[in-house]
Length: 68
Image (cartoon, rainbow, N blue to C red; front, side, top):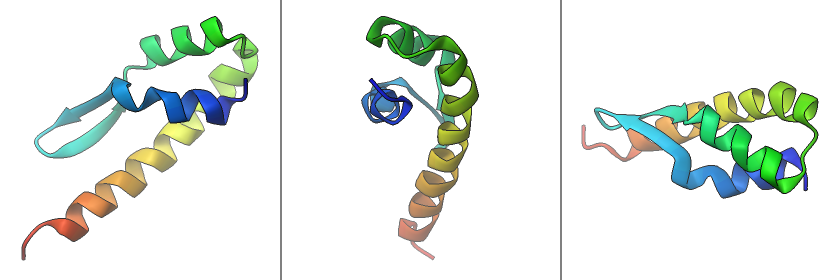
């Protein structure tokens, strides 16, 4: 399994506050990566980068959909 596959499966691990995405429950996501056989070093290096990009993109979508 690739880091990207784990990231796609991690949507249920989102942490949200006041209508904004804060990130993943990284402990849970790393456990998912470990269980899927993803190399631990790859998980630790790649998943936070994917998480940061996801947070920026999702929060931009949320802002764009809010009434002015």
